[in-house]
Image (cartoon, rainbow, N blue to C red):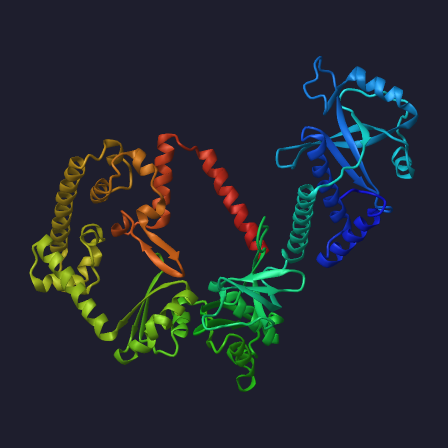
Length: 590
């Protein structure tokens, strides 16, 4: 293919057609054509030659120019891309009547053709100026001579493109058009994350549904489909825009029908009070295609949030259920009090008692024996959704199980006091009944709290505390010896806040020096929870049996790092200030 007058206008017509089809700027298509022609020309003139192509936007005429850089080097390494200052000046003077001096941008390219540097230069074009050149020449000194770094461009004959060159040019154009199309699609959808969009099913690829969303294609992955859904080409589909991100290849818009936010947005569409902000959806938990729970609160005392979401004869919630392929939805009132909220979340099961451990993020629920299966639900579905909704780890016990457990705890503590304090069973039971659970409580409590026990006078209280302290000291001495046998270093033994029993636990876990302790994470010491595939998994901490909280563990680790000189007070204060500022900004955005 030769770039001749016969097909000059065809270039512009092709660019216009492609731009209309892909809904992109025609100028981008022309630029892609210029780059493809330049690459094809390099196959003829040599890859080391800087060939540039300019297509006139009115006539379609393609101008091929060779660009060389003026250099002050004594010896020219690449004669096809560089020329000496002396040669540049003589060349320009020789062609002075046909020289056009332009203010231009010089680009440096890497091996992949990407621009890595841009600088302002003057460009001396050795050809007769046209109208466009005259416009660009305003304010440019036409008598100036080249200096080092300037560009000398002279026109070269257009190329005859063979089959391979034409195919290469086509690939370049297609690639540039795809990039422009992806950029346009990303710019259009990047601010629409979190919206619901309607589309048409286009095809299926390896279980993933490709959806035509009007301005491009989006992907509904198979793990984002509701289990029993099946679609055919041409079916209309409603999805939630879960993510929009730049991708060099493939799709950029990712949809979901299983995300909890999808249900939230559906209710916002069906319930005007939610859209207006009178009712707020506080939490959503879903088992897609089967069952879901949604917690709502009303900021108008005259509006029932549950009734508003259900609608007249269930019309509003039924519209959402139909969209979600029959997914059953429990709408429950939200409450600031965690135990009350949990009781609501476990509906329709009845709850007898709730015991909340806020530090551990754990909650125990006691239900009547006949309500156990209802509270747990089929395959644990009800309690799992309630746990997701409240963000708490839930243990469900029957009244009988709780009674047995409490009796076992009572007997265990009674035996502890009998063995360690040399008490009879009756007296040990008195201590447990009064709420004493550990020897430390007996040893270091105010004596007045022991005197309230029937039959305990001052001398008896003193004797009890003395026995408890002696026993604890003996246990601490024994534990300290064990820790030393395990190889625990004196630097760790002297660290404030660690008991001998804690030192034994650390030594058994391989933490034997202050440096070892300073490298620990807070959750490694105090324990914590991680979420894997929607399921919360318990991570046991080395010091968790001693009821060390995450905050206490973090403080101890930071103190160890300060003592070792790994961090400074100033750095900690700066980090704390940054975290406080970030929290404030997040709160303001919320």
